[in-house]
Image (cartoon, rainbow, N blue to C red; front, side, top):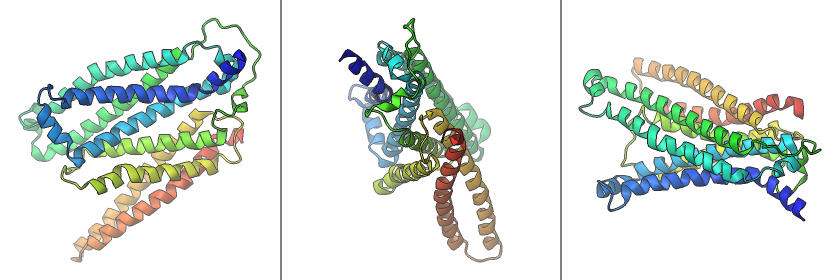
Length: 341
């Protein structure tokens, strides 16, 4: 009975890691928001008025969800890889793995929240009216510089998140003088409480890709003037409905690419496939967008209206992106798992 309980606990470890990562980040997010919005906080009333606007809270919530999704995915991958490599018997010998993961991850995220985030805030003040860069660069040159700064800050934040999950998982999954046991890798797939390898591959790939897509979307928002007066429905469609569609198509592509199914999930190969597909999609869409803009500009030079061409270009790029998404995920997942299918 005890052995069965330990076996089930080992199989639940990937899911536990994922939920712990989400819980830690969500709790810190809630504390940060409460510190700004509660009545006794400085400028609380003003901040509540700002965050009440859909153009503010919808992108903010989307950004938070993307962070939680990426943290949960990476945490799940670390635990699932350990489970696949060591087997459920050895993994069950880890004592307090979830507690250790949560403690280290919380410490790392607190360091990020208390040290790195204020530093980024000070950097943003440089671009505010009256700031050193605002006076030196000028109004017209300020937006590109600020966009690059936001992109760099966003990339650093993502790298810190990845490093935090890695550090917490490394500490939690470290074997401390456990007695060697005869357990063959792959024992993790024998139970019903864990995702089958093919579904795990598709889920990890889709979650990674949609996290990256949301990240680039939020980073790109530093380049454009996002209106706070936007209606709620378009914002929800753009920041939540479209990512759900991307997730579904990425899952489909990963599912097709992983057929008929690997013996083990090898989740970081799915992460690599998703990252490769993401980079390929950005390059392809950038090239198509550049060619499309030249096509639109040719209409302006000839004296005809370019509005119709702009609409056609937007529709074409959206359709091409969705098709390439499925094809790229299928091809790259197949490539990264070719040895194991």
